[in-house]
Length: 244
Ligand code: F6R
Image (tube, rainbow, N blue to C red; front, side):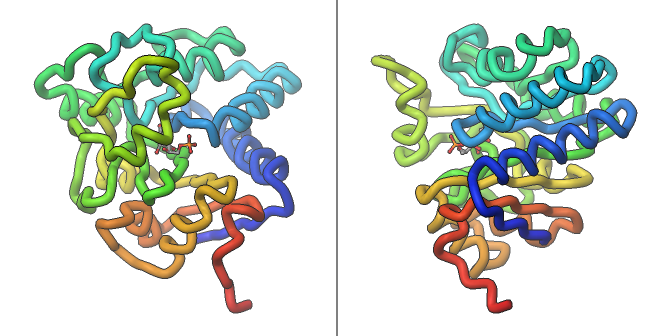
C-alpha cells in the first residue's frame, strides 16, 4: 500500500485528479472504474478542468461505475447515473456509450450482477479503480460483513450509509438496496486509488491501518492488492500514527 498524506484537501484532490489524468492522457483505451459521493465531486471538477485546459480528447476511454441504487429510475436526480452525467460526462460532452453502470433502476433485473461482470471482462478489465470509503469502512456499497469473495450483487444499505446519503434525496427516503461491484470484483482492477477526506473518515482510516482482511471493515481487504494507493487529507489522517 502506498500512502500519500497531503497538507490540504485541495492538494489531495489535485493529486487524485492528476493520477486519473495521467491514465487518460498517456495511455490508450483505458478502462477506469469510477466512484460517486461527496468526496469525489471536487475530484471530477478538477479533472474536468485539467482535461479542458489540455484540450484532451478522451473519447477512446471507457468508464464503469461502482454501484447504483435500486428503487429509483435511472434518470432520477439522485441516481449515480445522474451524478456522473452531472459531474463528469456532461461537462466534457462525452458519449453515453463510454459509461456503464450496474443495471439497477426501479427494480434489479435477475443476473444484472453477472451481466455487469461480463461487460467489465469484455472491456479488458479495469485499469484503475477510483474508490471512496464510507465512515463504516464500506467500499462501493460493500457494507460491513461483505466477504473478500463477493461479486457484483444486490446489497442492503446500512442505516448509517442511508443517513450519510440523505442529503441527496430531499424529502424522499433513501433507497434500501443497491447493486454494487463486490470486493472480489474491485480487487481484480489492475490498480486501486482511494481518496478519503475530512474528519468523518478518520476513524475508518484508523481502523484500516490497524486491521487486515477484516469483513467488519471491507476496505481492509484492499491492503493486500499489489497496487493500492491511499490519498488522505490531514483530517482523514488525523487519527493514524505512522511510526516513521
Ligand atoms: C459510491 C461509493 C461509496 C462512497 C462512500 C463515500 O459510488 O462507492 O463507497 O465512495 O460512501 O461517500 P462520500 O464521499 O459521500 O463520503
